[in-house]
Image 1 (cartoon, rainbow, N blue to C red):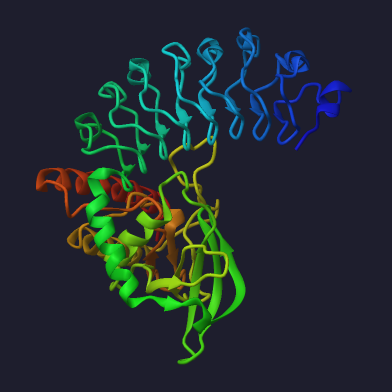
Image 2 (image 1 turned 90 degrees about the vertical axis):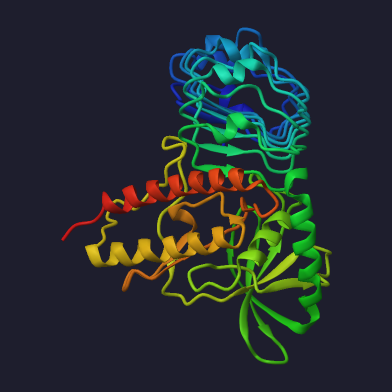
Length: 399
């Protein structure tokens, strides 16, 4: 992180990346323009900004801009004049309006999660480089025509007001990772699943909570023991009302519907009575030999996972790994669940034998209430994600 003083005293001269996060800024620092010949990544998140300068295009090398957690009420129109700008993040602001000309021509990755949007401009569908679009937790009930966004691969529409899936979404030729839960189109199925889950809940007081095992975007995972039986389990405590992928309630509903397969890390039961009132869920405790197959996408890779440079598979290990995930996906679809985030970074595997488990239902949705044709289309989209995984494994497989 940097400070405003770092910027003012010239110590950031020549910087390609500047992060002025949580600095209490109420105005855009004009001193940033002195970095116009080098600045490519700018993070102004967590401040009190409501606008950006009209001449922002003076930062002519700017590629990535984060302004999340600022009280913007509209996406700044000045962004549209930044010819190199390809990634924009305005998460958790107060945005109600996206001006037609606010979207830069090279836009590749747009994050508008957790705002107050009820509509989007037609220009969004005229950005052929758009690859990742994150719109969860808004008030959208329709989308502009996205048929020209042929590069779009990841689309987050969870927790909005969609009563049906836009036809333009189902027709996207490269879409592989959609999230659609928490909308009216899935509400009945989710409510039924959650109502049933509370009949089989575990009480928090019946658990002995142990060490923290890990932390993800949606919650903390602790080791736990059931006091009566001595059974070792894991407990996930959700830390927010929603994530970029959707809501904990949707994640829980889909996860419980998916339970019962050895290659899925699905919830065992709801945990009720958390002392702070948080939603919590009991999970199977995985042996320590299981590790993540890859890391999540980077700013550079956008929609593709990042594998360790030395990751290699024997043909037998690769075949076993893919067979496990293929079986898990087949089980999900048979039980009316779309995973929505079929990525290597959501796969735990045993390097010794290739056994693999698909985890993280944060983007999952219940598809059982959808028309059969749409359900089949969504499943085909998810198999496209599996094909990407196959390609990544194949590229790292040798004798």
